[in-house]
Picture 1 (spheres, helix red, strand yellow):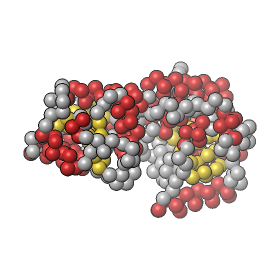
Picture 2 (spheres, rainbow, N blue to C red):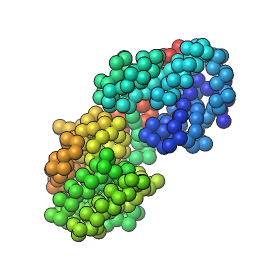
Picture 3 (spheres, one colour):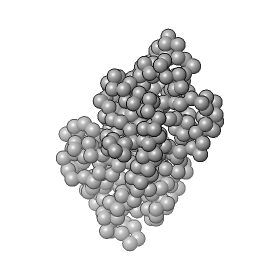
Amino acid sequence: MADIRDIEIIAPNFKRRLSGVTSTIIQLIPVQRNLGQKIAVLGSGLPKSLPSVRFRDLIHLWQKPAGRRCRVWHARRNVEMLPAILLRDLLRMKIRIVFTSASQRRHTGWSKFLISRMDAVIATSAKTAAYLEVPSTVILHGIDTHRFRPPVDKATAKRALDLDPSRKYAGCFGRVRHQKGTDLFVDSMIALLPSRPEWGAIVAGRATGPHLAFEAELKDRVAKAGLADRILFVGEHTNIPDWYRALDLFVAPQRWEGFGLTPLEAMASGVPVVASDVGAFSELIAEGPHETGLIIPAGNLEAMVDGAAAFMDDLPRLAAAAANGLSRASRNFAIDGEAQAIGAIYDRLMR
């Protein structure tokens, strides 16, 4: 438990279920702390290793932190903006409010009202910023480039996961469900693998509740195609960086996505990406002379087959895109850069 008198930034998490927003908080807070940002979380559903403050500590928000004119409350949901507005405007507590928006759809009237009351707004992509009706700063998400990194030896990385080291693998990682396009990946591999015996495919992720039947149907489809030994459903893993390191091509087949970190995780692992044009993917992946992968229309199976084939059948292009992706992820998308950019907004508000 942190002493709120030593805290300058509060990051609330008012949603118990794990979500992309919660994951962002979990990954960012330690990096922000390492950069000297005096930040703590408020709420439940977070690891106990993160510094936290209690609701009863909020009484101290009437007082300024040492050397600052106010504290910052960094909200990421409506339910986190509203109490901050009440604390600042009704109770006159000394806070400024930052809101990060990842939404790529028109906001409701209620959301627009809350966002209009913010002191600063961050958009996680240019697409997200286009849906906002207030000034915003675009700060793309970053990843831990120490955790996601290429293997020293690809064959060894495959052996460690009981994969065939002589085979190349295309992968699709994330929750197994229609929205995530898992069926598009499976169908594209069913189309591609019979004529490419040197390739296999990996689906890593978990199906839950109503999506279990969807996963079962996909496995049945693979079995009927005679590819059960080459299109592998490996489930959910905590060592997901090891699975990236075993890949030669990553496919992000989502039909919809808010932001989407998997292409960055793949690129940082030295793996080229074929991705649907959703979320921030078009802002993450470079096409053209220094390509790191390809962007294809969302929901288009034929384009996915053609895009994956373009890399599977051209190993020099595959290797070049892998090197370019590693360079781009390390240079532009390290999580330290994201934390520094957010920190600059905090400092401006607290000065």
